[in-house]
Amino acid sequence: MPVQPWGRIFLGTVALLTLLIAGWEGYWRNFGVKPSYRNSYGLWAMQRRRIDAGAGNATVLLGASRVYYDIELPVWEHLDGQRPIQLAFEGTSPLAYLEDLAADPNFIGRVLVGVAPDVFFSGYEYRGGAVRYTRKESPSERIGQSLSMRLIEPYLAFEDPDFSLATVLERQLWTERPGRHVFLEPRKLGYHEADRNTYLWDKVADDPEYRALWQRIWLDSFQPSADDPTPAEALKIEQEQIARAARLVAQLRTRGVQVLFVRMPSNGEYLAYENRYFPRKRTWDALLTATGAPGIHFEDYPELQGYYLPEWSHMPRHEAERFTAALYGIITRDFWGPRSTAAAERLPRAHTSSVP
Image 1: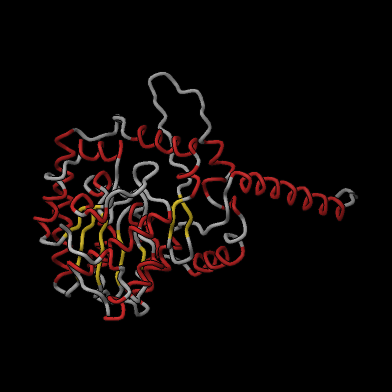
Image 2: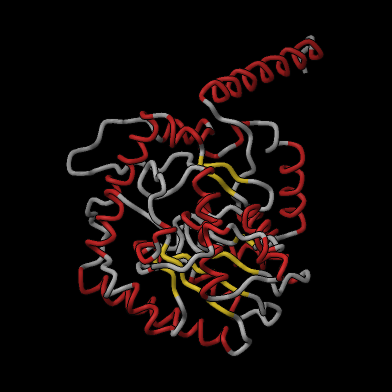
C-alpha cells in the first residue's frame, strides 16, 4: 500500500458524499417533495399481519389506487370507531388479495372491494406479489423495513423511488426509435403514512403543468399497444375474472364474511375510456349478478358525485375526506350498519339522508 493521507482522503470523501446528498435532497425539496414512507411490499406485509395478530374481525379495504388514495383511514375511524386495514395496491387487481383473505380462516371481518374497471376486469396485477412476499419475508427483510421506516424514510425526500437518479434518467424524453412508441411512465401521485393511509400530492391538484403531465400519462396509456389482447381474448379474460370473484365471495360467505363492491369515481377522459372498453352492463352489472354481493356504483348516488378529480381518477386530500364520510354513510345506512351506536351518532346528518 502506498503511503497516502488516508485520513484526509476519507474525510474528503465523506464531505463530498454529504454535499452531493444534500444537493439532491435540496433539489427535490425545492420541487415540492417532502419525506414519505415507501409503498413497499414490506409496508403492505405489516398491515396484512395485523389480521393474524388479532384483527381478524376488521374491515379490510381492497382495490387499486382509487381505494388507496380516496378512502381516508382517519375519517373512517372517526365515524366507525375502528381503523380499517388498507390492503389496496395501485394498478393491481384486488382479486389476488381477496384470494388470500378467502384462504385465511383467521379473517372473519368485512371486505370493501374497489372496482377500477380497466384493472379489475383485465386481471392486471402490477403489484400482485405482495402476498408471496409476506409469506416468505425473511427476518433481515423485516429488520430492514423497520430500520428504513425509523431512520431514513421520514427524513429524506429523495428516498422516494420516483426521485432516484436511475429513475430520473430513465424517464427523460429520449428520441423514440422508428416504429416503437415509448409510453409515459407514471410519476409520483401521493404520500404514504406508516399504516398505508395515503393522500394525493398537492402538486397534482394545484400545479397545472404537473396535472397536465398526469393527464398525458393516462391518455398515453389508453392508446392501443401490440401487447393488448384481441377483443375476443379481452372478453374471455373479463368473464374469467368475474367467475373468479364469484368463487371467492362464495368462499368468504361460508365464514360469514361480508363483501361489498364499490365502483369508485372517475370522470373526464378516464371515464370515457372505461365506458368505451368496459361498459357497465357487461362488467359491473355482470359482477354483481354472478357474485350475489351488494355493490355501490358512484353514478347511482348523488353523494358520491361532483368531486374534484384533477387527473380524472383521484381526489385531493380534502375531497377524499369528504368522499370517505359520504361513502361510509351510505354503507352503514344501506348495507353493513355501524359498528356501534356511538359510531352511528358520529355520522354527519348530511350523509344519512335517503338517496332520492
